[in-house]
Image (cartoon, rainbow, N blue to C red; front, side, top):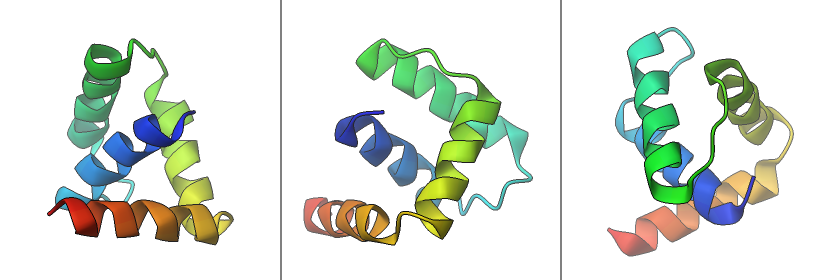
Length: 72
C-alpha cells in the first residue's frame, strides 16, 4: 500500500473516529481508494492494515498524522 493510499485511508478513518465496529465507514474507504487510486482491497484487508498501522508501525502512523495536520 503506497503512502498516498494510507494517507487517504487514515484521513477518512480519523475523521469518522473509526474503532473497528462501523462497517459503513470501511465501505467508504474502499470506494475512495478505488476511485482515487484504482486500488481494490477488501474491507478485511484494510481493517488489518489500519490495525497494523496503529499497533506495529508507530513511526509510519506518526508520519501520516503529521502530513494530515499540515494539510489542514
